[in-house]
Figure 1 (tube, rainbow, N blue to C red):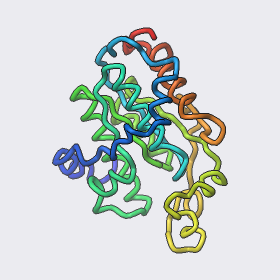
Figure 2 (tube, one colour):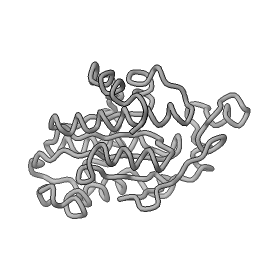
Figure 3 (cartoon, one colour):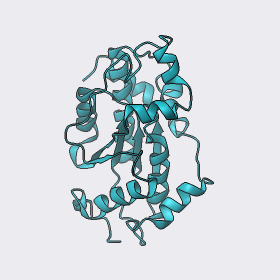
Figure 4 (tube, rainbow, N blue to C red):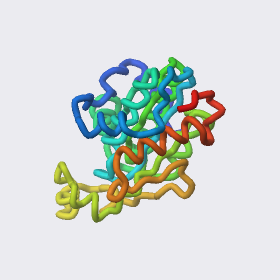
Length: 228
């Protein structure tokens, strides 16, 4: 466990709602993704809250998929919270930088919060770069193996750079941002994720459908989710 974990857990308990990124419920693309994919249960979802851990490069599509999955879970009757990387940095980890140690502590705080949400009866969707395998494995152990689903957004770096909605890659290439994942710092891709998507070739609807299908009938079927 990372140094300072106990202090970070106390810090994490002080606020919850600000970690939820702004809703995008009016986004027609996401509404269609949730409405049209075949995997959404049409009955109430049996409460068995778990954590969907979305990992990948900046601009890989984590936040977009997180909101689409949240809509699907909510439509199925489940309580759900999103822990978006940017919101987490602004609220839960404002005291941290981007060194290896600080990144590890940030991921530990996210994992602690996911566990707290699950124990409180809510699904958690973490949309965080989480570049290091060791940190993701620690997150899995913190949340608990039966509750943790790792989803790798394997969108190629070239595609992420083309998207670059905040100009971060451009700044990193210019040397203005240190420790930038994919440019000046490593991203250790999951070797055996529960799911792997490339948002350059797969639609949001396809990603949501595959995820919901796995929740209903795959390795997490022991959570007693209803059939579609």
